[in-house]
Amino acid sequence: MNRSSLSLRYAARDSGGALTILDQQALPDTERWLEADTVDAMIGHLHALRVRGAPLIGVAAALCLARLADTGVNARALADAARRLRAARPTAVNLMWAMDRMTGIIEAHASGGAASLAARVEAEAVAIFDEDVALCDAMAAHGAALIADGEGILTHCNTGGLATAGIGTALGVLRRAWESGKRLHVWVDETRPLLQGGRLTTYELGRLGIPHTLITDSMAAMVMRSGQIHRVLVGADRIAANGDFANKVGTYGVAVLAAHHGIPFHPVAPWSTVDLATRDGAAIPIEERDPAEVRGVVGSLGSLRWAPAEAPVFNPAFDVTPAALVTSIVLDTGVVTGAELQRGNLANHAPAGTAGGPR
Ligand code: MRU
Image 1 (tube, rainbow, N blue to C red):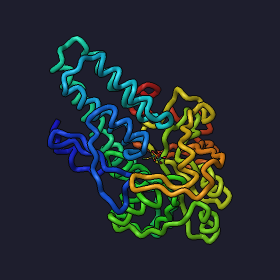
Image 2 (image 1 turned 180 degrees about the vertical axis):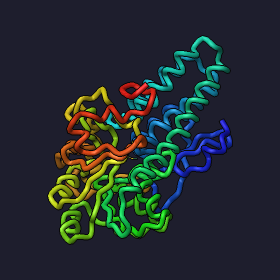
Image 3 (image 1 turned 180 degrees about the horizontal axis):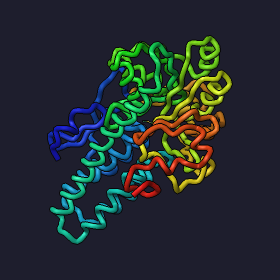
């Protein structure tokens, strides 16, 4: 594959005959690109969060399937690889959405010969990539319109160009508002245990020149009380039909704090994050990760433990925020108010032609 558009972004590249990903466990100080050409390598990167963020993991898995198709394997091998990639992380529905889409193409072109199958699989992977770029732009336009000049905005985890193929979800909204001339100050939750805020969001905001302050997660309450936070923007890994949503662990606590302080709270996500087949947040599968991540820090650049090696640990990677705490959801298709969610109207915001949406 050699698509110039794919080499422009900084989280995954497909150029010069190889698929590579930027190792997000080595950031911010080390920018290291790793090969992700085989399914085993990609699954390893997904497990270790070297490539991460709900939209990006779907895009990266699709590009990996395109690389596999290029080697001339048959449809059965491709479908098997899609199944394995689909299972690599359980919470972000974007991964399943992308793999189901790729599987549909594989099954539809299974009898067409290896070359035409590879061409179709590659075209679909590139389409998923390009669509994600456009979805980010659409979310940014809807979300930036909500932001007033001079706001202080809290965000959690990393939702920018490192987590998507485009400019991001929540961070894309902040970027668009900033580039349109609104003055902002971003409060960045460190996001224990894997520090996506402290390592990645600060890295992106620094590169963009957007004013920001890093805080530990436990400081959010006092900064809200001080009056310096006027809005909260976060991403989402799966939005259930009733508007409950899963996002990086700690998001639920931020939503409770925002409600207590009367601060508007908005998840920002593309429609590929909405899972109408999941009725409510209780039905969202939550990934549990290695206890070592809570006993200390574990990363590509080394590990450090401060808790006893055998300390019992609970390490859910995500939590669920109930729809009742949401002021509005910013989607690529528009803004869904909390009142609409309470009336069960989320499906009305599906893009034209998709299941659950207008045809
Ligand atoms: O475990 P991660 O780092 O993949 O979790 C990422 C998040 O929770 C993001 O907030 C979410 O994927 C939305 S990113 C655009």
